[in-house]
Image (cartoon, rainbow, N blue to C red):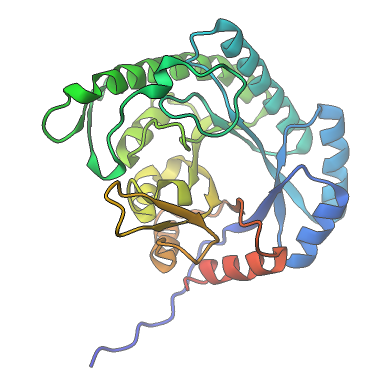
Length: 313
């Protein structure tokens, strides 16, 4: 008979957080539930500085600011300028909060997800490979895609073209943000969530690394990438580029020919949490694990499940 697995032990000590605006009442509830910090929404620096004092008074930390969607590849210059200004505001907000990262999704292509006020563009009707089809080959110098699937890539020529334009536009505008990131001492944590870009670990690592800056790192969302590659593969590939992690789950549907599934509460999906926890140990991740969504379970239950995850269970 097989020997039972020995209990896992870890040197790394990731920290636990939730997302909120936040209010003092929310911070008190999170603290009581067992959380150490919060990822905040963008607030004017004055309000952020006040909330920082409240958080610190409770023994809590505002560790990051969630800005989210920028439109750096938009054909509408006003959208590019608007979201660039918002990203700058987010860095200043983070500085006032005492946070060390801003979550930034630099642009998107294909079917629209998340927020955005721009009118739908033709780029949103681009044909994309299904998650399981991706076999990405890219130019190591430019980060431009050469192929995205095995065999004939002609059906995806528009996707490849839009992806390469998005990479170039994101590179240009994120580079313009770096001086302010350095001044505010806030890392630009790039996320590739629901924007149909850099959907495999190697290409995302290449994109983040291309900036060659300590002020640009990766914000990895566990649940949103399960359909493209196992979470442990993302973690091991991103390694020292990992700034922060969003904790979500995703239940793959084995009967779905597209390779899709549905978002579910943590520990109810397809993520192999004990394997993921060991991957965090391998890359020496001591950063924040911030639970996103999971609104149908209480703060206390979210904390209990995250404790199990951090214990390797």
